[in-house]
Length: 261
Image (cartoon, rainbow, N blue to C red):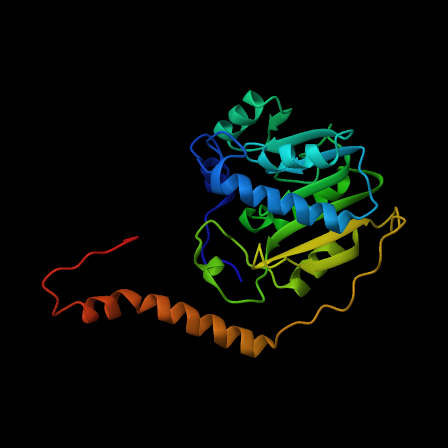
């Protein structure tokens, strides 16, 4: 799923630049801190015996996930790239080596490399997902890994309402994208119950072969295209009609209190 007429790359780059405020705050506090802890636990479990000597996070925000990963891989050298100036500033205040960069092509990460190149909930925001993933693949050292997390587009939910989600990927879409980006897929799984609605892909550069201790992914089950399309149309139509139904429901009420308007 993608926008019929989405924003152009210049608009996207501007949107996620100086004015983007999602990572504008001290990392690892409150709800977002707890959420990054859960992501770190999931990532650590999936990596198993793989112990990266270096970690590079793409779209790392204020560095909250990197700080969590440092506690689990204390000997690893870490770095991040992030397009939001505000988030970069907060990450640096926390002592993290985070660099301002926007990933637009295969050479965008020239000078950066790591055993583990990871990206959490970023690829759905990119205008050219294949270029993004190819850039991540090129940044992997030797028999290292790319770890990618994004929403599971095979389940219909509010993810397809978010304007700056330019794409929504079913698992089969993600696997196909990996194959065209020079990645050999060595793992794919859905998120644990405490992080509902996401999927994780694990891959290694095709020229490197699967790293020791990793298993080939099992066959990914995909929903019927027609059934999935029908569910999406129904879901979007319900939202389209939602305001009218609310107005009808409160038409006879003298006093109305609304939350989350």
